[in-house]
Length: 288
Image (cartoon, rainbow, N blue to C red; front, side):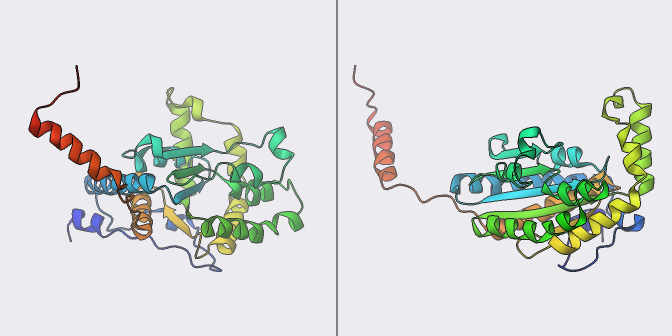
C-alpha cells in the first residue's frame, strides 16, 4: 500500500465507555507504517476541502451545531491542531474558545456555567481549547476541591453533554496524547528558540512533575465520560501531521453522519429568477 493509500485509510475509533484508555508513551507515537509527511499533508488538504463543504451546509441549515473539545497536557499541540485542522473553514462559521483559570465572576457560579455560554449556536462549529474537563483534571491533581466533589462531576458532565446532544449539538472530544520525552523536546524547543520563549511557562515544569497524577486523572475522565452521545478519541500526538489527519478524519465523518442539508428554496425564488432572466432576454434596464 502506498503512502497516499495509507493516508486515505486512516481511522480513529472512539474509546468505549467504561474502558480504561491506554495512555502510555507508546500510545502517543504513530504506527510504524504510518504514511510519510507528504502523504499526510495531501490527505489533510483533501479532508479540509470536504470539511469546508459540509460546514457550509451546516451553516446554511442552521438547525444543529458541532462542538469539538480539545484536551492535552502542556505542549500537547492544541493551538497547532486548531490552526491546521480548521484552516479551510469559513471563519464566520467557527468559534474557538480558550478556557483559562476561572474569573471571580465565573467562580461565583457552578463550574459548567461559563461552558454552557460558549456552546456553539445552531449552524456553528465550536472548538474548546481546554474545557469543563479541567474541573476533573487540574482541580483533581491540585486538590482544589474535595474528592467527593470532583468525583460527582463525571455524572454531571455526562448529563450536561447528553442535554446538549438532545438539543442538536454533536460532540466530539479529543485527547491529544503526547509522550513524556516529546513534551521534554517541545519544552526545550521553546527555551532554545527566541521566537518561542514567550510560550514557555515555568509552571509547566511543576506540572510535568505531576505526570503520573495527570495520567490517572485523564484515564478516569475518559473512562467515565466517553459516551455514545459524546465520545472521547485518544489521538497519538507525538507526530503533528499524523495527529491532524486523525482529527480531521473523525470530524469529517461526524459531519457526514449529521448530513446537513441546504434549506429548500422559498416559493418566491422562482418568481425572482424568472424576473431576472426576463431582464437578460429583453435587454430591459431599470426605469430612467
